[in-house]
Image (cartoon, rainbow, N blue to C red; front, side):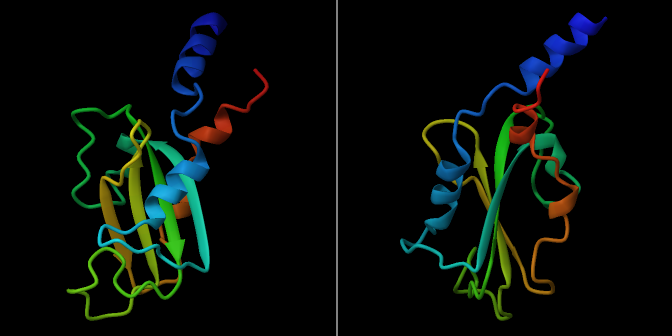
Length: 134
């Protein structure tokens, strides 16, 4: 039983394809060609299925175990996801970067009612699990 559980954990927690730094660098570059200036930026590696209750439009059903980097940024981002169409100031944004080469942003999201994404602390970072001593 322990062997089965250990094997399952090893498969799910194998090292990521992209590094945290690569995911952050990818997310910083906006689709319209400039680099976002942020006060704070962090990234977590999660399964796509972990996003369903947090990010509208994210459908994990086709590949729920795929891993993606969720990169959150804080600052006066001025409509990071879509600068032409956001009348309220953007205080945080999120970019979803699939854990695969070549690195690219799949989805952008943003918010303006809080300083940081409200769901951030509920996401468990799989990249930290790969460092567990078992």
